[in-house]
Image (cartoon, rainbow, N blue to C red; front, side, top):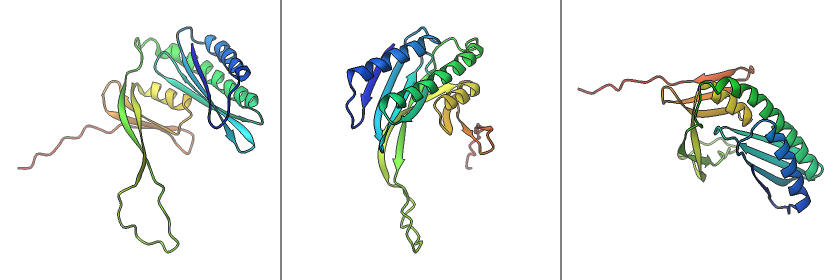
Length: 197
């Protein structure tokens, strides 16, 4: 197991690093015996602390959790409890999916952009252009998953939606959390291109 502990705008001591490593090693080894990559990041959050944990599992699926507490240990303990619950739930689902998936999840590169928030003026003038302002560019991955695996990945990552490549059709699909609590699935149909004569 590879565990990386880092701090944003705070120093992480050896005692906290040791606590994180031993706690996560015990929690993750209950459910997975293969190599798992874990990144734990601590940061200040007002007068409290925030802990974010990202666990990359050998199947290619990732789990994420965060915690908040008056000290770094409390923030981590809350985060670790959530990760352990997610892994326990994932392990039960993995048994069902393991029969159909014999290899790790394939992932392809994708470009991701962060757009500037629109400036809303008091007089509601029409914008000069509809072209968004790009403030950051990052690299993401688009995983090749079944719909069930995509829903599981979305829940584990605690995200409101997940874009993925359908492992059967090869098309880009989307699963998302609906306002009524159900999960929506968008699968764009193949369209025939009309040839101009």
